[in-house]
Length: 264
Image (cartoon, rainbow, N blue to C red; front, top):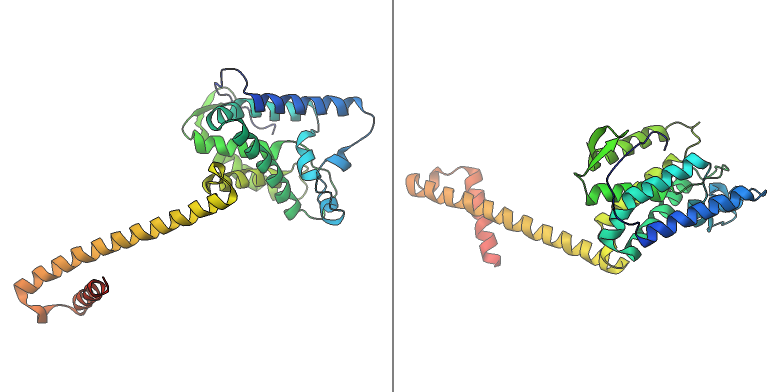
């Protein structure tokens, strides 16, 4: 995360869920800093333990642990900057649900792609990358100032980050959880595009199939419209030169149109 220096005018008071997450992450960081025991293996995300010992809780708890001061500061800075507008736009409960879904989804993604890893993964970055994806979808043309200088539309910034994370994930020696970053982005994108944010799983799936049904309907309408335009042109040709002078394709078009009319 140390490559990013985005700036955007968020403004206004910090909304309640963002504030609670900021405080919770800070409290856990300070508490573990003062504790002599290393909880990273127990509360961090260790893919091998999730598979072999069913340490399922780690998919949630790893989001609240951080590997250092700069790690937590950068994640919380992005949470405040980009998450605040999303919470105001969506409402607190919808924002919190999305945050947790992206965090857990990013963790699952990492567990799936590195199932034998015994290195604990810590940090809210899966959820944070999901927030960045949501911000780009919700405010695609809002200008973000990289390094406080270079204006870039949010959608292009996030696409660039996704490409960079994909490239970096190819390095087997990297100690950064790139798969969790990519997973958080992907899960967030699919969640928002499926319409699940506006209802439960069942209603989201129902809306998806309804949308597909409508798309098929309008494709059929458009196809029929083009067919009738072609039929009109062929009928004009028949008036000019007679049916016998039609091409094989034109006769086939008339036959198709006749069959369609017969079925109605």
